[in-house]
Image 1 (cartoon, rainbow, N blue to C red):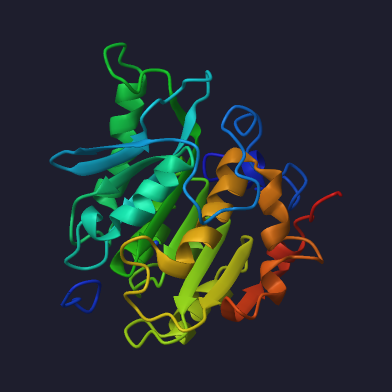
Image 2: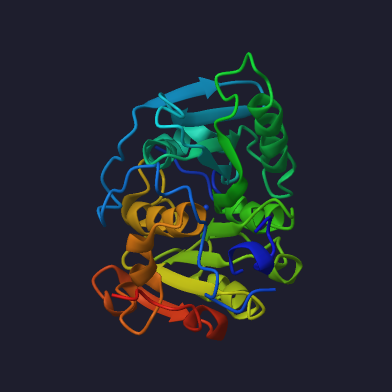
Length: 289
C-alpha cells in the first residue's frame, strides 16, 4: 500500500515514570507474506514462533527474528517511537513480542520522538541493509509492508511517521497531542487507557473522530493507566499484535477481531471500556467463514 489506499485497502512518557483507490476491504490486507510466516492461530498475546535478537545501535535499537528468512520469508517492519524521556528498553517486552511474531522492529532511541525523524530514518537503514549482501538483513526485509507505532509522545509520532508514503498502517498508543491525522491516509488503530490521567481517553477519541477519511478503530483498555503499556505491553499487547498481523501479514485469523458484524473486540467488554469503529472501518468485510 505504501501508505496509500490503493495497496492495502487501503517527566517520562509525557509524565515521567518513577519506577504506540480500492474500496474499503476489497483488497484485504497484505497478501503473500502470511503463507511463509507461521500462523499463531488467535493466540496473539503469547510469544510467536521466532527467537529474537536485539541490536542496540546509536540511532536505533533493532528487534528482529533470529532466523530471519529461514523459510524464504521476508519480514514486515514496525517503526517505533518512545514516550517522552524514554528509550526502547522501557518497552522491550512488547517490542520483543512483535519480533517473535515475525516483524522487524526499528525502535528510535530518541527520548523526543514527536516529529518522527528518527523513526522514518529506521526505514532508510533497513532499505540499505536489505540491499547489502554482507548484512544479515539482506533480502529478508519486507519493505512493502510497514507500520508505525508508539506510546505517548511516540504515539503522536506514529501518526506523524504515517505521513511517509512507505507506511501502511499506524498504531498510536495513548498518543500525545502534537499530530494531525488529516495528514496521513492509512488505516489506524487508536488505543487509550480508561484510567489515563496524562492522555485522557477523550483526547484519543478526538483523534479517532478526526480520522474519518481512513478506516479508524478506537479501543479504550479497561483499567489501564498511562504507563500500562510499559514492559510487555500489558493488555495492549494482544490487540496490537492482531492488528499488525492483519495489515502487514494478511493474517485472516485476525480479520474477525476487528471487522465484520461479528467483530470479536466489539463485544469484549472485559478488555475494553470503550470501543468504536468509524464508517470506513465498518465497511471492511469480516471473515468469509
